[in-house]
Length: 250
Image 1 (cartoon, rainbow, N blue to C red):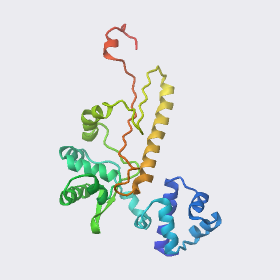
Image 2 (image 1 turned 90 degrees about the vertical axis):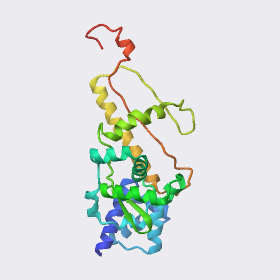
Image 3 (image 1 turned 135 degrees about the horizontal axis):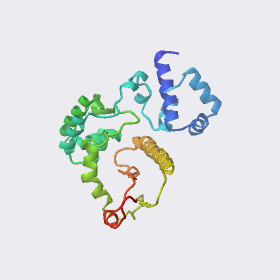
Image 4 (image 1 turned 60 degrees about the vertical axis):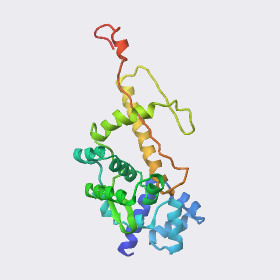
């Protein structure tokens, strides 16, 4: 098996694992037997037609499957403080950062926003210097973010989100289609909070996995909409209640 074939197989198996798709499910999507899929992956022998079918079944582009597997370690998990501040200071740069972590194509961006293409490319060149994106031929955008990419804890972007975005986000009754708001106020022990934390992190991972699976919906597809999920909890008492509380009580 050639080096390119090995890279293809490794990345294909990684993508199957990322999407939690087993051989049986892939076989069903391709209309072939599970044993045929296993042989195909073991030998690394694909026709171009079959490879196209696999890419369509997994919602990935061919180029993503032939990337050098060693490049995974160079993907960025966090920006520096100064890089985040630069994004906060430039709304268009912040928007292009959002586009990057959502795997938007140039067509996606130009379909959604009335921004000159040269201005978009200018911002992506800045993000390329930050190391979170790579510009390719024909204005193709390749995100270089890790699966666990996140904003800096209490960094400029999270501060901006708390101050400017969350008030606007919560100024809604959440009664529309695809919207949900759940507010719970109860007393919990430290042990229960640990369980809640674990389940909350699992939900956050599910959100990321679904967003990754949906990234290949084309520009203008109304099925893919910008969606924000906020998970937050802490030990807390309303200030007006706190004024009525006895000392040394929660």
